[in-house]
Image (cartoon, rainbow, N blue to C red; front, side):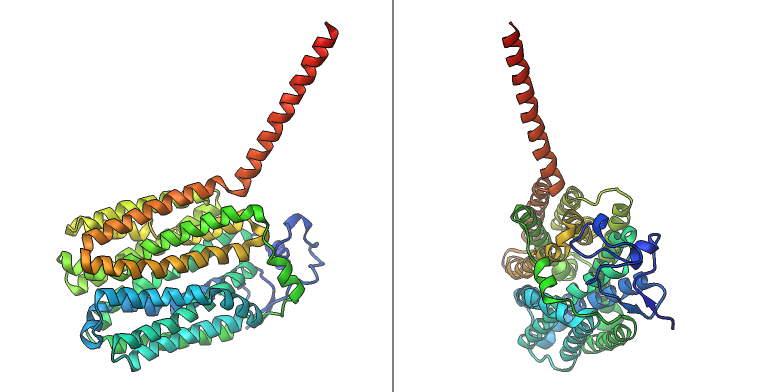
Length: 461
């Protein structure tokens, strides 16, 4: 296999071979033959590093997300063996996302020290360990809680190196699409979990389903070890310089993180409670699993499609994110009607558009603050983790004690608040803030000019 130094894919090959230093505008980056001194050089085992980076990010995300969605998809089968109830399901799913949220800051620092390859290998190995652990020893739901905490740790560790690898390996004209494909790995895990219900869960049993998923995780680890390049260590002074976040960006990023958290709170409820509610509506367990896969397929299509359009100047803003969240609220309202046709339509809409904004949000934030892209997207991802933990935890009790109709209506209300927050965050976008500042400055200058003209006219009189 040939070795290639630096990314060589995409239409901007020369730019990709010598990417600008993160946090430095492209206009100030080094020339084509003299890259910046602290810009790392990566030796790839392929002539298509962009494709390899995207596949590696997808594989890592699927492996680390699959445990929680398999638990949601196979929750009915797990009840008889572990005593799992709807409220307990909410607790174990919340534990997964809670572990991701708590360990995310440490995971970001650790992945920076480990580099792309070892960070992604460790994350995928931890995810595989959780899958094998659930298959081998889960006598009670408390052990399921333990294994999902382990899986959450792997999930928190997987995103920082995956995002960084895409930033290094993918050309700028395809980067939004790459982020969409990588974030589309989350619904891909949901899609796989939905297919696993009729294909494996109802045939060979839930233990073998988790065992097979663990074997697939081992394949992913082997691919990462083979194709992902080593990362030269970044000087500590450079890392600290990149961590300084200006105060005037904090309001924008806090609002974007809040929108991400609220959107993730209602989205994670869809993955956790769709199958059980669909069975209550009148679908069989097999059809309910297929319905979960159908909604996940809509999400898999929506995320990269939103990125593809953003690369072409269509959408790609937080206003677009707000509209997608609003569409999800409408879909959740259809699920609350509890009619077979409205429930199926609502699942597709809530999954597709209502949960298809994740990659677009990461792209919009990183594009708004390119000098602080890593830190900004990390903050947004932390908000998503918190929302993903709080949503199932709270909604599990709502579903159990107030019924699915109230649960889905509450999720729709959360989606409306998320859409409103994203729309407000769009008003604090750095570009809009600069435009308003320039307009105010121009207005003041115009007023001073008029005053000078009046003074001159008065003097002439």
